[in-house]
Image (cartoon, rainbow, N blue to C red; front, side):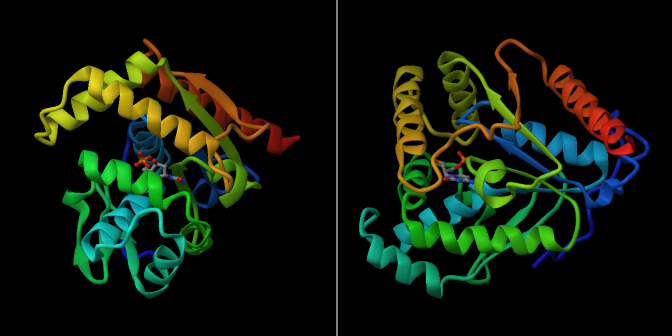
Length: 249
Ligand code: DC
């Protein structure tokens, strides 16, 4: 499944991985709600440790995009199950950006629109879609170390991850970050509208029956409200170091 070389390079990271488990074998889960900074921090942490980053949300976005293209009703779980079965999703990790192929077509640049935001959140409530994507996510980590971000990575996908983080931030801050992303993507939405959609996605992601968004009991929670990414990265790397110390004992 993994097709590209691992992202490597310095981002102020630790030169050596934790003794006991080589850093290239570490499995690190990062979960949290929309706009908490998961993808940015997952990418930076992966770069600092020289391992691959996989954004699991992009896989749900790809399924949401595919369902829209196929004209499948987003609440029709039977139709989504059948679509998931016959759709091939491939992630090609890369730094600074991965590449996402749906049935061989590169859709990476089409996944960050308000319509896909909503579609991804809806299709992610379908158990068959989740089962399919979780199997792919586990297969990708089987080959080696990974930093994977999402909603259920520490609770469902990798309950035995070496390290788990749960990022959170105030709704206002998260909505503002999402608004900025959308501005960059050319969507002319107002902040209030984006805030409402973020709140709706929070409710859907946390309230769904299967694998709802929640922090694993053993996750390190980091509130990123007003905290610079460099500082968040420093806290994460300190946790990697503590993990290394513990594994020595
Ligand atoms: O992280 P994101 O906003 O790109 O995720 C898009 C949607 O996919 C989000 O509304 C919730 C869903 N998702 C999920 O259910 N489980 C994951 N591991 C990742 C994302």
